[in-house]
Length: 564
Image 1: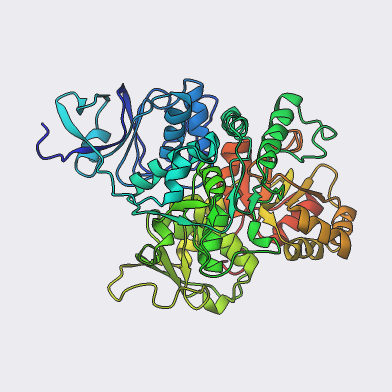
Image 2 (image 1 turned 90 degrees about the vertical axis):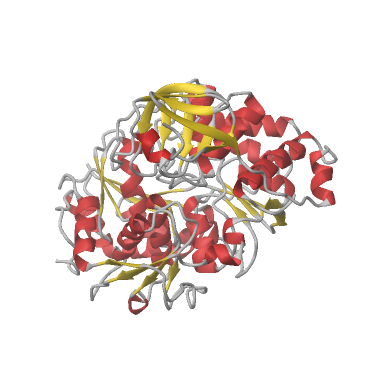
């Protein structure tokens, strides 16, 4: 049985065999897979608990965090990786992790692309064997063909870098860039003006192994490069009681990138820095929320570059000319008509982003019906971050709000709706959990000064209950401004701590309070990832819910007033 199933394309060659684990939804390896075991820890995924180690993983694509490449590399280096990855279409994040494992560490992890109906047939199999020629599963045989390599036009400078003119690190970076560009179908590389490094998060020891290997090769960035939030408060982790076996390598990872010339900005919201990119500017950013905000709200141009590729871009100033760098790839392929209730507050935006990502997991959407809500930059930040947890796409458009929304969709673009009932169902899904709250988590992505002020206003000087903790994670620039204008003092008077450098998606115990079991957050992103990352019940709430939980220790699961 083979002739009617098409053929698989070999993106990364290799042989493998093992049980087939078919995932019915895309998965983020970071926040979705435990790098220590290979098990799915995304509590909201249909296959939560599935063991991917040694399996032929059949999944349409990945979604969510750019850091998934680091998790996959860690799994490969530790011998807990999938035996092979089979996608139904183009995929970058896990593919890049597998490419780095092979290119730099001689760890083979085959990656294949298999369109329907072969994909569906393989997903239904119990086990499979992959050779150079075919995928075999019982009486199922699907031939494998090498992926057609696009004719990639390299500049004289590109060729010089490949030949080692700027050292081994730049040559290594260019080899990885060329391989990714070819699998993306890029015709050439393009210059970028700046980069943002996401790989400085200590998601696993593999992140440090990669960074220090590149540093040892003499790596040095050639464009202005900012750094994402790291995994510790760089200056205070020892005083905070962070174990040295975690804190020391996390700090070393930050040091490695700084030594390579990156700025120690340590924020997952680089668009809040003074020098944000401009409309039309080609940049090389990693970190899913930052990429989506840059493309959607700022009108800059960047692909959702996986961790490790971000450094390669920073070392060369070049990126594959594919995806949202191209006009045609920024078009909306789905219109999402949103029924926006009257009287909404800031909590509606992460909810809409989360549901829009579920509606458009693999295509850029145009959201309509939202202009009347007059979203602020912070509202759009929350929208983009939550969208990035449930969609693999690098941007969205909001009619009447974002700079490229006008004319972004064709007249015959398919439409779906997010109704008031959908909003209520989505809120119940994300707000479900214990009424008693132990911890309030603000700042995923990093909080802005306006968000810090809003929390202080909502508290109104009320002290928190002693058993309830509250932490705001924010960039150093925002914390300095909050010091200057008194906002930090107001929060501290209510018992709310502000912590720089790390964010909720990289926080660990004991900075994350050891006794906390139930968490309330205003972040749709953390409401999604938090249960798997922390092992706690994590609920999405309004800002008023968070203030009430801090003052009373309780926040009943309930619909916001604008949905009730």
